[in-house]
Amino acid sequence: MPMESKLRAAFEAELRQAVEAERGGALPRAWRHLERAHILSQAYAGPHVRVHCLMFAFGWRRGDVRELLGQLARILVAGPGSWLGRAPLGNTGGANVGILTPMPIPEDLRVLLEGVDKERE
Image (cartoon, rainbow, N blue to C red; front, side, top):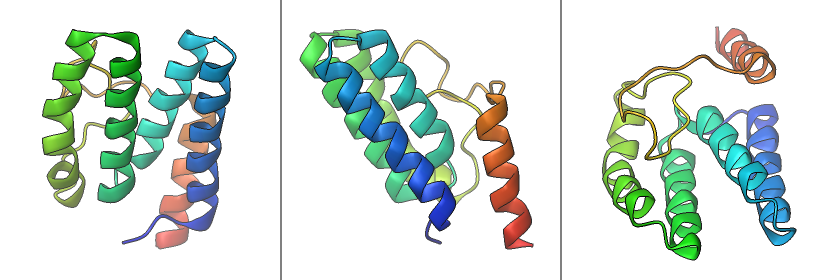
């Protein structure tokens, strides 16, 4: 199922902000936006895999071998995890966290995701 338009807009905004932050040299902020995009994408296979590919590319540009290896594994399981509803909620998607570890969802993203869930009902 495709992302709801409000969720898609928030997802794309996080990705744009990640690009802008990285261009400006604000690498921790860029990564944080990728993590937020990951949280928003978890229920949607295509966007979920896309974020992991972008995280892989970020790791490549940084020369971060740990992130590259972690993202390769995540790229392989992201699509099936989304299709099967097995993506751990709130997980930020980086190699620095367990691949199946649920995490707290930031309040603003939680409100957005809950709104999407209510619209589906």
